[in-house]
Length: 588
Ligand code: ADP
Image (cartoon, rainbow, N blue to C red):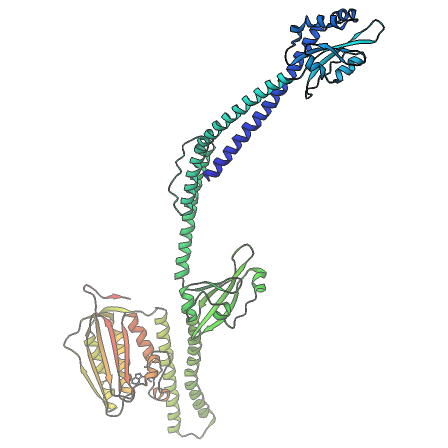
């Protein structure tokens, strides 16, 4: 950069000097020539006055006399080796005499001589001609031109002078050029130094270093430029930092948002995606993928998107997941539009909807069976007159037990709803699981015995206290023991044990009953789920007992586990957190 600027500066200065010198030279040489001609003419005019010409004419008969008279004025006429005077024949223009005979012998008939031969004074001057002269006709008495006298300067003096001037000018120009080159070095240094510093600063800014200044402390244009540059650099830094911060925020949001995001360019190439999208689509995404690889059967027409700029909503199934995908156009440049897909996982919502539908269907189904029975028996009783008393009582017994069953279902449903909406009153207090277990065992002993089952309670001497609603927990334990009785085998046994496991206190009810197939285990706590519907119903079950138990235990911060070996028996364990020291009873 320096070199080119320097070269330009040298060129400008050289051009300047050469052009100034050319103008000055031309002007000077022209002036000198004009001055010389003017001088010549005024010299001639001062000698060749009309009186002097008249005097000459009086001697028109003798060229020698004319010669002498003019010679007398040699000094005034400036006659020397470059300038001569002559006397010519007025008719023929032949040279008669003069100051320089050699020159006179080859004297050319200048336009001024021809003018004088015609009777007029020839004094036209040509700046560019080879000479300048003046020619005066000397008339004879009869009006003819007897002689022509004149002075002719061959300009060699002037040319010599001009040549001297020219060489002086050339020397001055050469000197000027040398000075110009030296000056250009100095000038270019003072100009290029700050420019170089600004260039360095620009390079540093381009490399991301905004802190350094060019350090130019002057008030000229470069100084102003440097200040503006510093200002621009500071603004650029702030703006870039803001953009970076925004980008980081957006990037973090993009990476961690729960919804999946996938962006494609106008050609359908995958531009960007977030981890949530990979999870939802259940596959790894790579930049090499195309729209059709990611959403194989989803046709989104650009025209539809472009029309109102709104998103298009499409349901999409990815493996076991259900997604709602919102497609929206994104501007990627001046005239390029890409496609952004926002993936929303609606699997849980779907499951919830399904389970809600299933629940309503289950409730209807559960109530319909006893209702059908009630209706059937009631109608039979009403229509038949000849039913004996025993049959009537049996029918009424069925109606009553079905009514009980419906009441139980409705009661259990109400309990669940209350638990769902946290509307269940909990009387929280410190309680002893050992005591609750023993009490429940005692309460259920008769029922067990009636079914020919052995119920043993081998609880440890003491168990840490737990905080909870004793009545509800008792209800849960009884429910579990009831199940152990209901789903037992003849002569089977039920064992109640307990203990502590870390921070938890547990109560375990093990039976030697029919057990639960492995595949049913995960669904046992679902509402209305039963392994053997007929057996459950027969034994008065609603299919809601374990669901309620789970809800109650969880609302105490505990868990309930169900382990079973099909055909051999089941183990149900109730875990509750050990009460913190200082915990006291309070209503909940
Ligand atoms: P139910 O009113 O039908 O007993 P629960 O919610 O109490 O409803 O139990 C759900 C299902 O779990 C039962 O129908 C039964 O199939 C199974 N079950 C529960 N406890 C046991 C157990 N101890 N042994 C075998 N199966 C059991």
